[in-house]
Amino acid sequence: MPTMRAMLLDAPHTPLHLVELPIPTPGAGQVLLKVHACGVCHTDLHILDGELDKPKLPLVLGHQIVGSVAGLGAGAARFQVNDRVGVPWLGATDGTCRYCRRGQENLCEVPTFIGYNVDGGFAEYTLADERFCFPLPAAYSDLEVAPLLCAGLIGYRTYRMAGENVETLGIYGFGAAAHIIAQLAKFEGKRVYAFTRPGDTAAQEFAIAKGADWAGDSTQTPPEKLDAALIFAPVGALVVAALQATHKGGGVVCGGIHMSDIPSFPYSLLWEERVIRSVANLTRKDGEDFLKLAPQVPVRTDVKIFPLEQAGLALEQLRRGDFTGAAVLEVNRK
Image 1: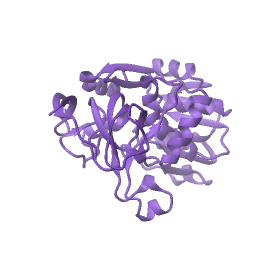
Image 2 (image 1 turned 90 degrees about the horizontal axis):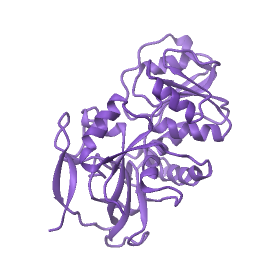
Image 3 (image 1 turned 180 degrees about the vertical axis):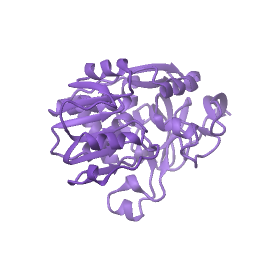
Image 4 (image 1 turned 90 degrees about the vertical axis):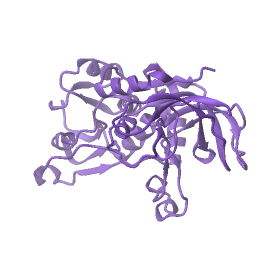
């Protein structure tokens, strides 16, 4: 039986390790993908750390997958062999629950998440439901486009949740998602204020390079009040800081899948019609809209490249904030 290299997680709090696994066979409606690149995400860290506590185990992480179609399951006809496609976090839905019927498939009662419920892209091959794959813009290389498939898509949904009447936008946590969305916000005429970990001058300089009008640490007050704030760092205390910095009627949108507890705060910070909301997953329409828009900006991703066998190192460097932009595994070169 043909095999592939994969980085396997046996249990939370244990290191990923390189193994040989059988190349999977696509089922009905599935495509087999030869993985060229896979982004490394904070969600992978949350799974590794046991903060998302119901993964399939053992598990191949990775949900920002760029690959070429290597095989087709029964009835799969949307793509042809060798087509380049992208696979995001949301891998399938039941299509019948109350949320799917209302066009809210991101809230599906029985979802499938790539690199969580099923094996993902930290491997040379993976399977995907063809209905939840995206054709990718030709303007981007495999390594450049991988971060758009989660950092970009979840960032885009978070940004859109902030509403239409936003002139001043705060972004808390300037990593993979923020460096993409800052470019979009500037393209749409917003004034962007970036907040980083205290003392992280490299991230602040990176934010300015990506178009931010001001960058400081999360304990500072921005030059003017914010119409909206996006929080990409998994730190609950930032919700309070963002409320303090926000205009009347402003919104604080939490873009992560996991966050530490939000401290108590006086009602006066929420009063005057301020809003706190979260973002869950994505819809296929988010993906279609964003992947059409990104080349128009054009969004440029800054990536740090790791080979497949260094997936664990990439995660640890992401945890420590050792680099700016996004980490991407280069798996199979074309």
